[in-house]
Amino acid sequence: MDPRLLERYGAPVPRYTSYPTAPHFHPGVTAADYRAWLGQIGVDDSLSLYLHIPFCAEMCWYCGCHTKVVRRYNPIADYLTLLEREIDLVAQAIPSRPRVSQIHWGGGTPTMLSPEDFLALTERLRDRFAFDGATEIAVEIDPRGLSMDKAAALADAGVTRASLGVQDFNPAVQAAINRIQPYDQIAGAVTALRAVGISAINLDLMYGLPKQSIEDVVRTVDQAVALEPDRLAVFGYAHVPWMKRHQQMIEEADLPGPFERLEQSEATAERLIAQGYRRIGLDHFARPEDPMTRALDAGALRRNFQGYTTDAADHLLGFGASAIGALAQGYLQNAVPFRAYGDTIGAGELAVARGLRLDADDLLRRAVIERLMCDLVVDLDAVQDADALRQDFAAELKALAPLAEDGLIRINDRRIEVTETGHPFVRAVCARFDGYLGAGEARHSRAV
Image (cartoon, rainbow, N blue to C red; front, side, top):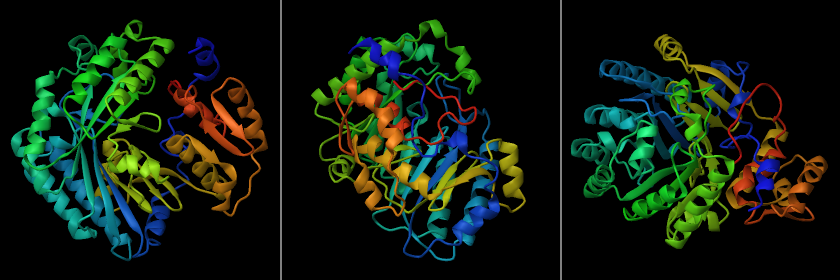
């Protein structure tokens, strides 16, 4: 690839797991708004639930999540009491009992919960919301702490999908990011999960890590594929030490440069495709028979704060410190500091600290960006046919003209298609439709 493309289009832009993006949330959206929005959820609506468990046994230096290291279980137990209270508060504000299509346990490390507590919290969700046989329950797992007892508890709780953080199998790279986990340890965790009946396995890999080479990422792909995962996510490391101070432990001189990152990304994709996986959007890969692949082919793939998903729920409810929810009216985020979250929930109030109310222009631009991120193609007229707002997007099409001249996209009237060359730059394409970009002081990771 021409290195000049990186110079032109590799500037920092959002990851577009939402639109508008989280840096533009503001305190003008409050707990009272959340309660009112919850009151408008109907019995025929569907829900997706996200539970944030913000604890880890040790800090991985690449981490960009809201989490903290704990050595004792007491803080976790205290936090679970708050989660239970928040679940009750939210459920009481919903006048009906809508169906839950998906639950995602994220963190941090959800499997730091004791088996008994994981089961109890899941049962509380079942008591407060409507589940059925099609409800998917997914959990993020640190393979270093997964025992057979915990694996069995996950199965008993109804977990159907597990995502394991791998990143890279090279011991030198693992040491550079403070995450030592030999291949046999990860293979053992996968075996344990399958032994208890959790057969849908996702593996998370990363490129752009310190001391990482193209040979490392290709070798890691081969080792990961040997574990026969259904899906793989391949994320580019986002070095944002101004936001995450622990990333200052990473030597910037050890990080690959922009062109090396691009080569690592493309080498990973080529290897996974050669191994029989389908490329999903920007950074996911799945087996041809996987539900995510079927959603892609049907034009039904979605994108939310957990990345690409098959979940088509009407509302996403977030539980826990820093958790983000997405309802029909807009976005809400809970207080990030544990003390602020705990004090508010302890006082019997919803812990919303900020959010954003969506207007018609936001909804239209969100639809355009989501289709580009998911399908790598969007028909502006078709999107607008589904929306009452009309927008000519003349300025956006003009801004896209240089990308078309450089072969990153094809524009046919009002249909925009990202080319193979433009695939790594899809976030830069989406940024041309971002009405908030440049407003405020938000800082982002590089586009590639």
